[in-house]
Image 1 (cartoon, rainbow, N blue to C red):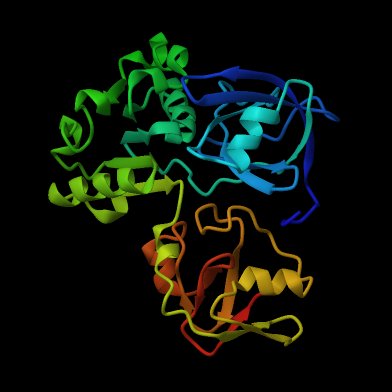
Image 2 (image 1 turned 120 degrees about the vertical axis):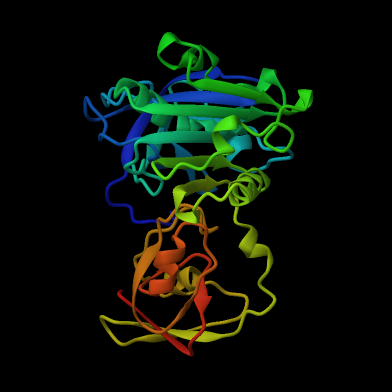
Length: 324
């Protein structure tokens, strides 16, 4: 396993159901305790998949009582990885190991919210929408799919509590962010926060629309499925990392990651997505200048240079001293 064994939770798959074309929802119940740990909307868990290791999935349970966790997994096109294994091998009654919930995509304080989901990006935003509806806080949820057959959680999204807040966008009918910008995005509002989850292109279109209509950059929080920064690493140079606790130094080569080097040296670190999108491996920096290549730290946090994602970021200085 590529993260600390401590704190892992044994669970059993209670149900596995089709949830829109190409999606499967799993309900997980604890094996050894009556209730699972509580969490807030936006949280995720790591599911440990045989021979593949941990894969990250947002929690989208209908309630947060802890009686069960629910995740929904889309079968990725041509997948031979986590989504393929879950769709083709996971069955009710199977036993799994999961991590405790972690939340790097929390619901910020605001007077009003605009939520934008692209495809299976609905999972964290559904939990947020149900929470906001329960608290009677003003919000809109815009859910974009390639066609309506792919909509997940349709009964929950059309239930009385959410129906008046939810807007479906079907790109096969030319109803997408590119072709039909929601009115709520045309007028920026300083009391509104925008949250989004979806693929890179979806997030970038939303950012472009917000910039065009003069929203402030810090009004948008997002989570995406992949890290486009990882495709632009031709300038990678070797550097050293140093452990603050022991002074031990290790060389990180141009085609190696900090996480790889630390794991090979048997340094105990957290690691999950390995793409800089989940935040599991964020570590404090004591000295040196990180070369940030992640999608989880904010621009302000990157400017402070006090934290780094071990899985993908590098160093601009010859030595990077880590709080390990």
